[in-house]
Amino acid sequence: MLPTNEFLLALPKAELHLHIEGTLGAARLLDRAERHGVVLPYETKDEVDAAYSFANLDEFLALYYRGCDVLRDAEDFYLLAKDYLDTCEVENIRHTEIGFDPQAHLVRGIALDEVMTGLSNAIAEARSARGQSVSLIMNFMRDRAPSEALQVLESADRWIEQIDAVGLDSAERDFPPALFAEVFAAAKDRGLRLTAHAGEEGPSGYVVSALEDLGAERIDHGVHAEDDPALVRELARRRTGLTMCPLSNVELKVVPDLAAHNVLRLLDAGVAVSVNSDDPAYFGGYLTANFVALRDALGMTRSQAVALARGAFETGFANPKDIERWLVEVEAFDQAWVRD
Ligand SMILES: [Zn+2]
Picture 1 (cartoon, rainbow, N blue to C red):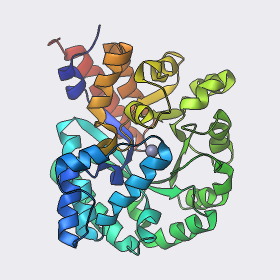
Picture 2 (picture 1 turned 90 degrees about the vertical axis):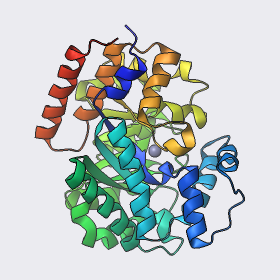
Picture 3 (picture 1 turned 90 degrees about the horizontal axis):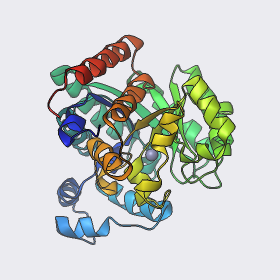
């Protein structure tokens, strides 16, 4: 049975792979540019939307980092996170894990304190006012020096209570995970959870390296894990999460089209895959839109949608009691849903 849009919106969900800088939509981009007197090559929402097109990961990243230029102080980061957390409320995202890239801001002269103050204020408000569950993931950019990542980690020590995990992102090719073994070990020593992008444009060997050399507890993307059948069996056996991002993969040409995406094959092989939006302002939709697109392109059934939602909760970095509660909620929701 195929799930309706209504079911997919109401389904209790978790999102584990989301870059907060990638939620900068046209309206907020123009509003922040005006506030800071930043001159952009576009003036209207339509012009921004038309400009958000790219041929590959490198082109996308160039556009993405240009957009970051309007994010300058704590208010900007607060509003950015608040906009996204408002969307989570609407989409029934019970738990979200927000990634951010300190280096994308530090290189522009924006202090970590501005970023952390804005993000942590929005998160604290979402938790207290609406009971939203939010984890924060500090990502290191793999196309910058590993020594710089270590400095960023050390400079984040005064914010360590607000940070739940570290990740590794940005351009993947030619930057194998092993380069970052030292900073991941230092993050683990601080009690942080570990995740890493691997197998998006890089080979399946990068997935293996992220698990073995970095000790990553889950893999962001992992599309190319499928190229190694033994690895897929091992991921399934260990229930290692793959936080997959279907619309992103189409936009960045990781897959030729959505019909060729392997998320449901990996799900059926027993891997703990989840669906996520990555950089939704750039890739054509937030979390529910990714679920809808999978139904339309791949015939994702209602039970597969429920299994994907379960996979996200199961592999999240929330505390085990909350995870258990959400898994029960998903089950009860599915049982009780009669409106299809
Ligand atoms: Zn990502």
